[in-house]
Image (tube, rainbow, N blue to C red; front, side):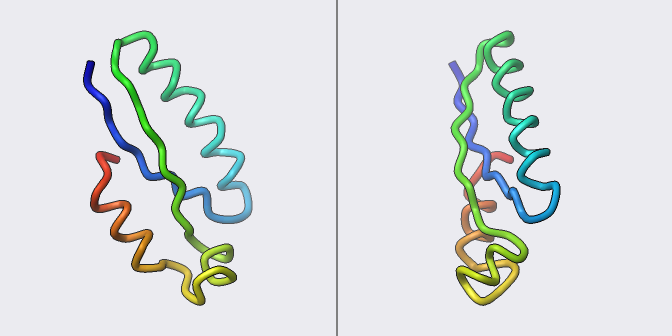
Length: 69
């Protein structure tokens, strides 16, 4: 079974709600079509500014580059 790694960028505003529902869809597709997904959350936007002082921390960029999607 193939496993794919996805970095989640929940951001601010409606982002967290949209990503939560998207994960449900992705999990259903994985179950139906026989692949696996792993998820890592990364900071983006206002929460990143609060935590790291920048809206797009270098750690987020690294995680995105290392993931499949």
